[in-house]
Length: 280
Image (tube, rainbow, N blue to C red):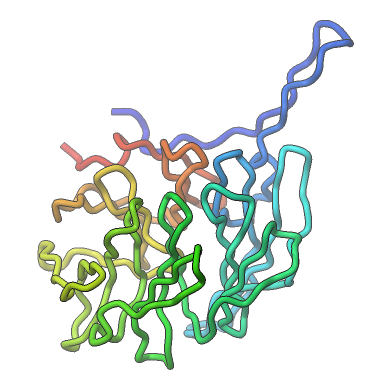
């Protein structure tokens, strides 16, 4: 079987046989510094990356990052300084930002002024594939509840208010369902939530890993890909565990949606559906 991850090489502009030929464009992610974490990748290849600021040992404080915007033309500034999270809105140049004050904002581009959308917001943020909605948790920790915000209208609506505390929601690509970890009965478990319906417990094998963040789980094909303290895990949408990759972290979808990008020892790795299949 092929190796479970292929290190993304730095793409250099090819040498030209004739001086009149234009160089090949540089992939935006090739400009990532080794220690930077990839937060999100747009369909056009632009990337949001960040250096993670030091935190107190054994602290439960928020992860704070210093973001940058990478394009084929180079690094560009991101307005707003250090943040908790930064995500592209699919199908646009706009971004959602979660500030250190737990305010959710929208910018027309990473260097544009911010418009406030909601307060007391806790990540991770998860968006549908069309950029019409985002889900997150909200409230006074640890009693956080699930919220869905319509990005077309700006209206935030609670989902399953009794399902608290909740964390690490993942919105399905079509926006119809949320998979979330919650502990309403004192022990963490996965739930599937649809608007207007009671939340349904998602039965997975006892002892299965559960999402812990700091990034949102990724729906990739017919699997949910997420991380915990041990590393990266793939769980089939049928509830069957697929594969675990210890030490691999921070999964995000590639810009073309054909792979999961993740991090191992500072290197960026590209994982295909085969790489996340159950071991024979």
